[in-house]
Image (cartoon, rainbow, N blue to C red):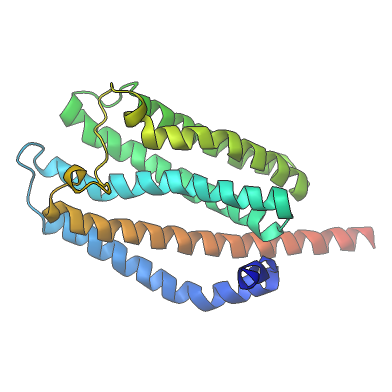
Length: 243
């Protein structure tokens, strides 16, 4: 645990990012390319959904990352509130635009997938509605950071917002279980083997998910490093104005 907390030091964190980011980026690109090419070009059409089912390789990983990105922000925000480590607050800030983009991808691909399956682009389904609200929380989180000049105050307020928004992150994941109604299907992946998609779709889906996870990590590390450097620049400029 001591080794982990050492990276709360911005200099050590940047050194770590400089070391692991190139390899992580290559792995992300390789996994994402392999999963999408395998899924879209080398899997058969579903006997019910036809070629439409292949959007699963974008929709499911994006939806998973949209939810888990917010949960990562929650953990980082709690660390900030409890231990006041600036790297954790900046990591949460860095993850927000990435999570918001994942949410947009999930909403758009869900609409494209849902239209031929449900006969409509949108339905006020419990999971879809909670997912849309989660996206609005992403926008509010990003806007709140931009609206407040003092970084520490912004980190405090956005951390509280992150805690509140976590309710909708949980709802968007488990809404199908909470309400036995709505158009949205159950989980495509589960610890219960019977609830998983067929193996021919399952394995490329796992590769796609791995690619999205690695891409998220690479983008968050890159953006966090940028946020740290931007914070240093603002601090130096403030000192020069004072002197």
